[in-house]
Amino acid sequence: MFSKKKAVICIYGVIPRSIKYTINSVKKNVINVLQEHFDVSIYVFNMNVENNVVDNTILDQNDIKLIPYNFYEEKIQQDFDIELSEKQKQFNLTFRSDYTPIITQNALRQMYSEYRVGQFLQKNNFDFAVAFSSDFYFANKINIEDCLHSINNTNMLYGSIINEGQGFSNGFFFGNPKPLSIIMKRFEIIETYLPINADYELVLKLCFERNNILRKITNIIVFKIRANKNVFGWPNQNYNNICNIHEINKIYNNIFL
Image 1: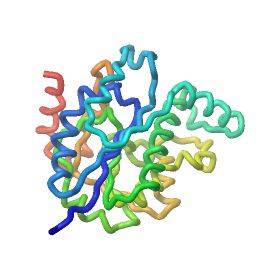
Image 2: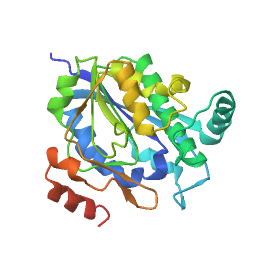
Image 3: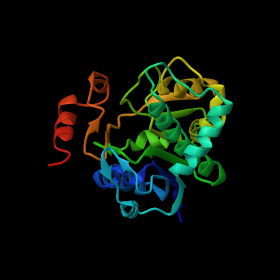
Image 4: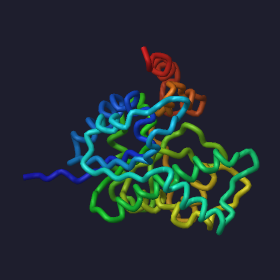
């Protein structure tokens, strides 16, 4: 009997921030599509903000249960911030001048969340992996041909275009778990990238280059939704190369209707 290859979907970040707005798109356009071709597991890493307000909104930690996960890990954000503060005393972990202390802190928090995903991938045996932030809304289906193509390629990953900045868009990648783990774990040696007179996206690009990993663009379209329903990542002209911009605008404008 034919046995399906093993895939894992890794969802990370402040999970309750907006998962109630994004989970249906994740199920329809990622989970259901991959289940047709793979034996799928789901890993969740939550940066637990406890009772802190995010985007001027009180979060419901029970929203995590909206994800049908198989593996769950978390870190109390307050504990991480203490550890980060100690690390910042030792190293100058700064970006370009317009990155305020809170922007820098949030960038490093996200990078730590990705690091935990990388650790999980390194410790477990899967044939394929996709990793993305829980605030991503998927406007179309993941490209299964790209997924299957990436399985045996250990020197490349697929990503999307949402905000290239000075480097590569962050928050969504898929491919062979080996290169994905390397990219996701860059926080482990963050002092080799920082300080830098550039943005978070350039650090990501430098990590790809440092490890000789090729970044390829897939035709998935994602938006970031905040806890207050604000949406980041308005469809831009870069999307014209991979989709019908008019159709994506329609989806964007009707997310909350």
